[in-house]
Amino acid sequence: MAYPEALVAGAGAEEEDSPAAARLAMMELANMISVPMALHAVVLLRVPDAIWASGANAPLSAAEILPLLRSPGPPPHPSDPSLLQRLLRLLSSHGVFREHYSSPSSSSSPSSSPLRRYSLTRIGRTLVSSAGVGGPSYADYVLQHHQDALIRAWPRLHEAVLDPAGPEPFARANGGVPAYAYYGGDDDANALMQRAMAGVSEPFMEALLAGAYDGFAGVETLVDVGGSSGACLAMIMNRVPGVRVGVNFDLPEVVAAAPAIPGVKHVGGDMFRSIPAGDAIFMKWVLTTWTDEECTQILKNCCKALPEGGKVIACEPVLPEETDASRRTRALLENDIFVMTIYRTQGRERSEEEFRQLGLAAGFAGFRAIYLDPFYTVLEFKK
Ligand SMILES: C[S@@+](CC[C@H](N)C(=O)[O-])C[C@H]1O[C@@H](n2cnc3c(N)ncnc32)[C@H](O)[C@@H]1O
Image 1 (cartoon, helix red, strand yellow):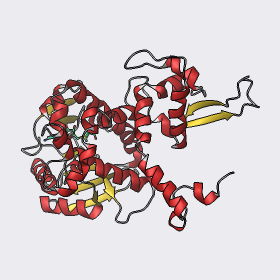
Image 2 (cartoon, helix red, strand yellow):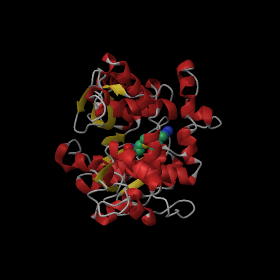
Image 3 (cartoon, rainbow, N blue to C red):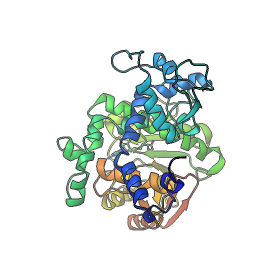
Image 4 (cartoon, rainbow, N blue to C red):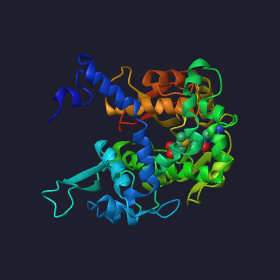
């Protein structure tokens, strides 16, 4: 090892004690954009599907992967796999791929280069659908986050700090159009958003419904507010036979593109005006994107739509009170800045206590938070 261990150690080392380690940490932060961009590139090229190969997950070299790729543009040039290998090396260091390394002496290759092959780790496998190629996975979420209209917003993030009451960076960068209106006005963006939501929501719902949560007992009519394609509602109705009527409520242009689902009625509307009545309301990843005033309005409309004793079951990221360097806290805080940039300058992730206060302000008497998943917390607001 050519460098002192303290210099190359990751988070947790006492960087501040060593100027060289501090410079290295800042160099990593300053170049961090390479990580999501490399991730976006391999997803766009469908590298995870090529390696996964219906479950084979056999380690492949970049040269072996290249001819398997489905390029969105011109056909890949097979003569130089080194560029793909560079992306794979970076993403291996972030846990997406596992590098299987053979040094030149141990490989049968006559060349002096080491042989590097790559398989998917458990993290990388989230980019592959369990329903087969093209099915929902985190791949669409990666694509959704890196489309041009969203990328344009990021260099304007500082404007949110200077003008907190002004439009969010996304609207500033896209002719004043807010993100949901942008998706609604573009068929491809609308479809990508629905696939992205299904890809992230389905594994969470699978775990929620596998016995971890019993809050749907006694519910016959369930309304999913901001339900997107209706994927979450379909999963609930498959697993909870007592839920006989499902209402998937979302913006008119969203439900117009949603697939027909047996037992589910798609209803287009605006949750700031009114919400269809039901025994209970499910609402996943909706409150986070809105301001406190907007959340209070949404929750008031939910309260009006429920009978006495009815409840809202919201699944939202919930921030810890204290800041730390754990993956959970980082994932939550990164999503918080995403919301500030794309949806609402004052939309944000909240602590459990802040959610409790929002419920009280909207007229709910009861509240409980159930921590079943590291990213989404189940929040029950009881009328
Ligand atoms: C972050 S997505 C969550 C989708 C879905 N609940 C899930 O978690 O997979 C937020 C959803 O809220 C919907 N939405 C935005 N504004 C709305 C409005 N005014 N009324 C109803 N739905 C709205 C969006 O179209 C989108 O489907």
